[in-house]
Image 1 (tube, rainbow, N blue to C red):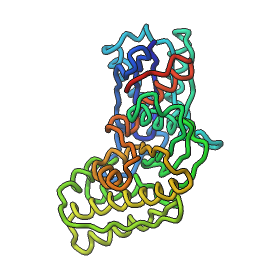
Image 2 (cartoon, rainbow, N blue to C red):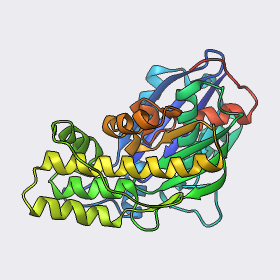
Image 3 (tube, one colour):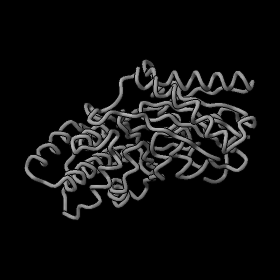
Length: 315
């Protein structure tokens, strides 16, 4: 059985096909939304336009890799998070395309959320089907969220903590744009940070399982004004994010000892963040880049679960 996933976030248009018999992602295609130099994101009207333009092209690319007439179910993220009031117009473009595809083929349409897609992709990459029926702690860390979630599989039951102001991805992207990189700038910030060999003591503002990151933006600006190299400041920024998440995870594990801790979201693609946390938190799971950043992989897996064509046995 093949399931097709659609995700139209404020960062990328993405599609993926999941094969339940093989237990693997057959293929996935993605196109980042274009952001003008110096800008820190897109207006929703622009995002909707770019998704609308990209979807036919990506469906065509997908059709060259897999026989779309074999698709048995369609999944789509329809809003950012599974909570009341969560809404972004950009997700309507994916919903429209997914609805048309499912109606034309006469196959089931499964609606989920962007956050649940992130969680599902991370769980799958970490341990195949094993974690989907367990209690886990999941970080969803991106430009739009820094949430610590207590989950049963891919279903967030409790938000244990979040940022009271700036999100981790925003702090990283704002630094990158300040240094002249295009938005989103996480990959370039990580690239520069890798060239810094100086010893850095990161700071964090954490209270229990919640945090504040607005000070990090100011600290990075101050370091640049003081003459610190871009490489140093980029590494400092990422290590501060890593220390923040580590302290939040440590507090959560005091309430839920022994649970696996999964890190999802684009910011978690950073090797520097991963190495810092895994050295201090052996129970943590980081996943390969394409499973961490915005993608439709998790959405296609959730569609398979919804139509009861899952679990699988390996990732």
